[in-house]
Length: 126
Image (cartoon, rainbow, N blue to C red; front, side, top):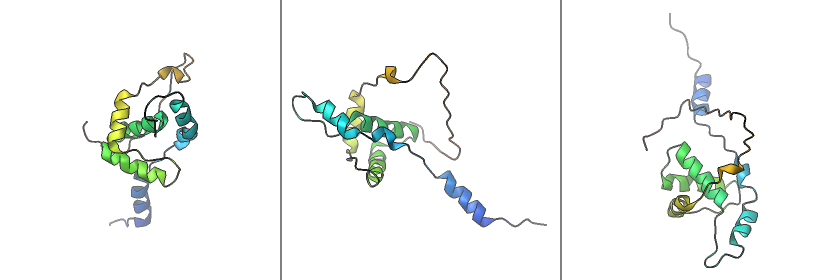
């Protein structure tokens, strides 16, 4: 005897596997950050904040995206927010020059708990 598949539940399960939840709170205040970055700067002013470049770099590393694919993600996010969209070459250039200060992390000597759910994700080798 065969069991009947619940196609509605099966389809919903497949759809949920493709959901990506992004916390874009780190991008709030990008205009203030950009203003501070450009204070007393000589030459051409920055157009994109370091937090935006770092956010896109994190997405690139997390999901094994190419720079052009990352630009596509940035375009999608810009439809939801007011952030500007850097080109893939800008992200590449800025990521190589970006100095990440890990001292800003709230580390108080206790172990850091990191949970990652990568079920359903298929990465490609770097």
